[in-house]
Image (cartoon, rainbow, N blue to C red; front, side, top):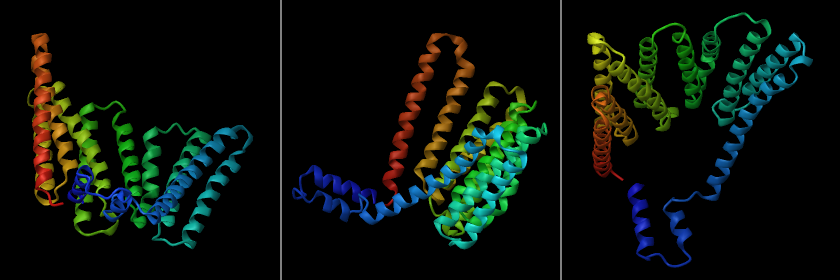
Length: 316
């Protein structure tokens, strides 16, 4: 498709397309959406905007009428909304987009119910428990939904729960290790499920979002090791980062080529190199800043050339 797009643009540049027939050529090359595609897009956009609006409406309703509603009324309204969503999910197509939207709505309402319980009873529980219970309670719906965005919401809740838990008087190293391991396992499982041929994981963007979180935590771990680690305590972080970088390269270069993933690993490596230079050179004076800047520019340019060469190797 990328090659076809380039060819069509070359035709326009060379004035090889008859005047007035530009839209016809673009439609034939599938470079602009057809009216039917626009209707599908607008229908799904309205569906998901309505789903988010319904969940937000419940939350804002309680915030506005908090003093006027009794305890039973508050819980009853949220539970009634969840029950109504369950009935709607039972009556509509379970595998259709509407069913996925209802499952997502129920998952969001469970969070609202847990937040309501914590606000009403003031149990004194830590915030991480809210997200932990939220992730645990919606897990059955996530499993039966077979819907990538719902899985990403669940993974986000797990990440938030871990972040809040390990932020309570624990070291930054422990927090970074926990997030790095969880997101690494999530990325491996998503790639394994994709390779197994699960139809709802055929899109590229879900693993890419997971890879962004994974790359951020891997980069944070190695930067922590560079600046805060002492002596041999950085050995495991360095080995883990090197293994992650090598695995990323081998998988997305040899088995499932993906420029986005390779670019994420390259960006992480550039940050790590800049961190190493900063750790050992910033005390040398102003010239160190210039040298580090030139290294970053040079490695970025070399990386861009490398990625471009890989893109040219891939079939159109």
